[in-house]
Amino acid sequence: MFFWLCLCCWSLMGVFGAEANEIQSVSVMEGDSVTLNTDVTEIRNDDITWTFGAEKSLIAKIKKKKQIFSTYDVPDGRFRDRLKLDDQTGSLTITNTTTEHAGVYHLQMFGAKLTFKTFNVSVYARLPVPVISRDCSSSSSSSSSCSLVCSSVLKVCDATLSWYAGISVLSSISVCDLSISLSLPLEVEYQDKNTYSCVLNNPISNQTTHLDIHTLCHTCADSVHCCGPTEAVIRLVFSALVGVATVILVVYDIRSRRAEQDQAHIHTLGE
Image (cartoon, rainbow, N blue to C red; front, side):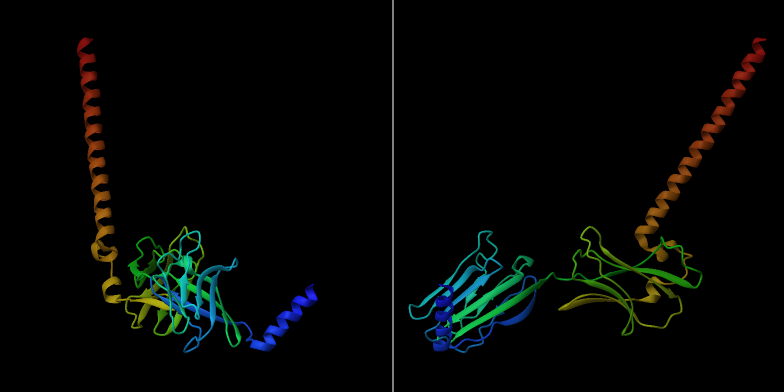
């Protein structure tokens, strides 16, 4: 039985001809559309099927002779209202992509020849602009240096945060831990003339923030300019609380001593 099945397959391939399975890698930004191309200008009498995932779930079908052009959803609903078929080429477009649409897509074209294609689709999250701030908690700063930190709230595994001096990479971090945010420190001199920038990138896009040394890095005589208004307010509030607590303790101590003196005076009079 197996022999006859193989013989039939070879016979069909001999009649129609067949192309080897072609594998293409496709990348798209989350929210954008991506088109998986059949690479033909016009389908004539072809039957086409598009499937998704290891289970090869049917998501689109074309029967050109019968003028049937259909798209299908999968049980979890990820393709609902997102699939479009080109009735001329048979290409498949996925609109408003999310990370759920990443995966393997299979194309089969049955016509004058058999065509098989596989598309590995990667969907990348949109990147936020990284933030550069003065690192007030650092103990490494000296009278001539400035401690900085670049951070991003993005929590994904496919992004890298880097410090650049000009076009040279100084340091990078890419941690696949969704419970933390990316953060990268940098120590510069106050009079440094280099051009620094912090870059957050993935394989298809990047976001860059340039360092303004004159704004963030200068002497810290004024805490408001040294660490920013938020940190300065926190320090002022903390200082005020310490001052109030000190006054309360002094008043309490004075009253306690007066009470002791009064008690001693009363005791003397009683004797």
